[in-house]
Image (cartoon, rainbow, N blue to C red; front, side, top):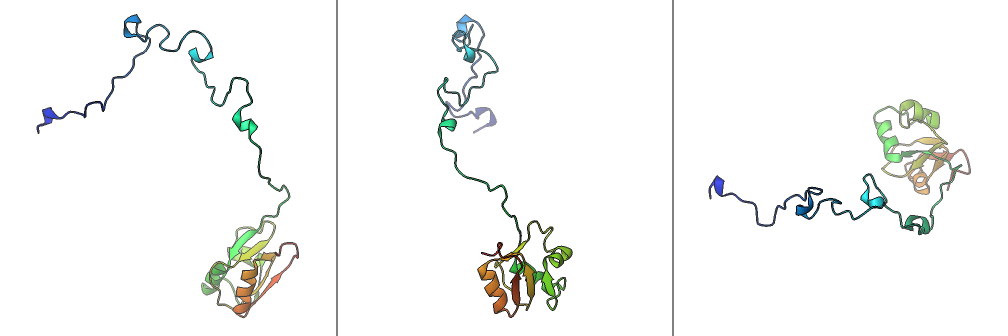
Length: 157
């Protein structure tokens, strides 16, 4: 095989359809768009329009609901607290409150409170005082010999 013998596979390329180039081309005058009407004009986008019938997206029922006054908690995992204790950024001997977590950079901001989740291992004996915690997080802290106090009753599950 030589360079001048290279060819694309038959049928792999098609010639471009050049519309509006005279009657002899078979695609002249109206260029395959028919006569008059919205679709024959340029700049038409009628996606989702069903000719005056109620469109499908309006016929389907709406689902879901976002509670406007929901509480949003800053989430902290136990593994992260352990990491900060190991790095001597958190003092395990003192009580760890939400303000301490913000000061040390464990959480950026408190939002509606801090909630502790049980992802990761904790081996340090810590005293935590937070707005909320999962049941498994409370168990894990108590198993490590520490205590987890929930400050508001609504946040606990």
